[in-house]
Length: 607
Image 1 (cartoon, rainbow, N blue to C red):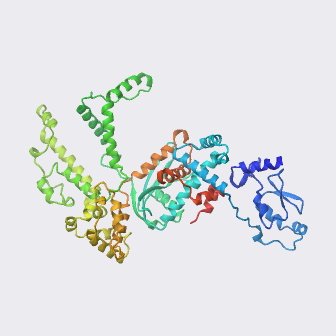
Image 2 (tube, rainbow, N blue to C red; image 1 turned 90 degrees about the vertical axis):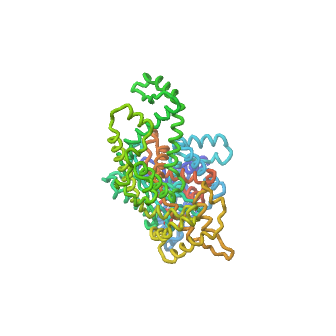
Image 3 (cartoon, one colour; image 1 turned 60 degrees about the vertical axis):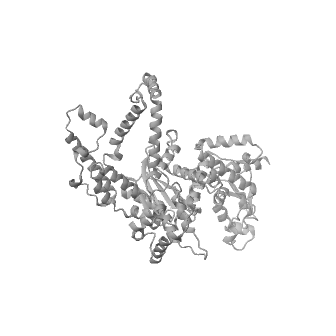
């Protein structure tokens, strides 16, 4: 009995693929699996020897051999075994099929508890090495309950998070993306261990009518043992392979967002931004009556300057706090998660005209559309005497010999260059995507004046989004829906300025007449698809921030694949209502069948 319980203990506590234990040889020995005793073709003769858990015994031949399924099957059809068992012919292959194992309620509860513990570890960014410590503490707290049966080592925890929770949720997302249109945002970055990774974010309209952005994949750009560069071709290859692995057609992608442009002054205007921040901070110091001191840097010998640094920060604290709050508000606006694609054309036009108004006549700007403004037309320039200069500049000219005309000429040149670059980047205000998306603003959609000023805007929208509107019948339905929109009574809650624009179009799409018809269904559906297009590339940056949160300097040996699975798991846990993670049936099934190792999970994936 003691030997039998010892073998049972070995089998119960094993935490390696295929019940393998190392015996010092090149290949690991396999433990005997008692489920083989229930196989019809093995039942009469196969025996289990507790003293040799890595061996299988034949009762007819009185011999032992390796506990491998293939070895047992080979023995069953040998001539010696057939003679000893009294069989005239080998048993049919169907008699060697392992019967499905029925899991008990306790086993299912245990699997669900393991997944919930790992979801909590993912959410709180608990390292894999600390998972066994946490499980041990749970065992001590509840030694008689379900927690006492949990067995989560570092390797098992990592594989379950990456290959069950992470890959399980990715498979569910892949099943959706195979049959729906979606957009992608990509960007590449280098982490703290100098590994270059490509983040792929998918943006789509979910089944719950919510526009979502999710991490699809984190791809290692440079593969070990292969020569490659981070070229456009290599990045495209990474994207193509990532979706092909899950049988997702690239034809389903109708919008892309790439962060690869360089602005006017160096990369990301870094040369200009630093000076701007210092100037803004100096103005705020003057406004608040605080000494105009700069924030000190620590010297190489920190203790020499620590006191002066602390005193300087304390002195500047009120100004630093206010300055940070204002800059934080700007950053939130620039990286907004909300939908603003329908407002881009209007906002860019407003800012462009504001800049041009500093050096061009007001009458000309009012009577001329933004795309027709000729910034090189000197006849419409303001005279130097009409140029708006601040009080400080005027006082400066009273005390200096600087030539005012030369100064104004330099300003003209700068503003003209700024306006030109802005117009170039916005395609001379002929961007059909942003122009046609203006009609998706609820205020514009219900405005008779807007419709009169833009009579062909729906035709432009249909011609622009041919990927989504690919047949004549759908185009006709969209036209009819746009015309019927004015006859629908819209609740005031959807017309508030702070109301999400997607909620307005969900209501429009689902609006049903008394006869059961839905006059604006096609218009509402296409509007939601267009609103799902990305307006900025901030989502990959959020992914890299999460990556740095997971892969720290103390955990810099994590592979990109592990980080990718962890990020997918974190997103799955966070997307649940009130962060109350409930494992899916597929996740529980994979856990019960020990399919959380990469090679096994790949075989079980449904394409």
